Amino acid sequence: MKIYDDVEIYFVTSTIIEWYPVFTKRLYFDVIVDSLQYCQVEKDLRIHAYVIMLDHIHLVVSLSNKSPKRLSDVFRDFKRFTSREITMLLKKESNQQALNIFKRAAINDERKNNFKVWQEGFHPKGIYNEKFGLQKLEYIHSNPVKKGCVLKPEHWQYSSAGFYCGYNNVPLEVEDIFKINE
Image 1 (cartoon, rainbow, N blue to C red):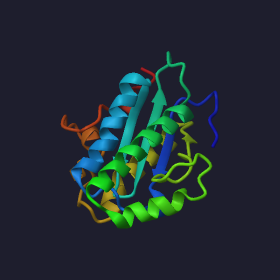
Image 2: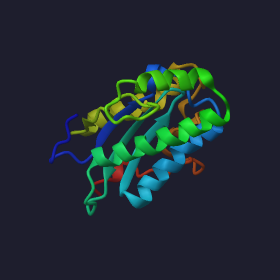
Image 3: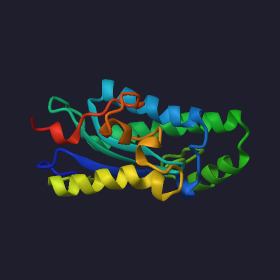
């Protein structure tokens, strides 16, 4: 994981263990949305683009300039909290298949967790220029289309594509990536 002092904005990815499709119901999506909203308010996370897929998330993020926090700490806490919440929901629904996968993944976990929902890391890639930022924005927003979930990017409810198309009803507050330095 590389975080650089001269980079403000990062493209990040977090993937569910074994690419298991956890996000198949609204309550699971809500865990991610609510947790990211918390990070925006309490941890100074700025979200410039995002997509929540069935088994992974992609984001373009930064921290506010006044934030004393580190991006790696924010994502560590985010993943720790959402792991607990997702596991709790899976237990309520008696989703034994998912629980078994996540329990097996935790066997060698050095943190001694009973369940491991997320793969290690969040794979930050610094966005150094506008061309790379546009490429990642396109990649994020086209993900649901490429996976056959929707016909147009802005139709995927759990994405910032709607924001960039001028819609106001996206679940997460987004800061336009093109207005960061204005």
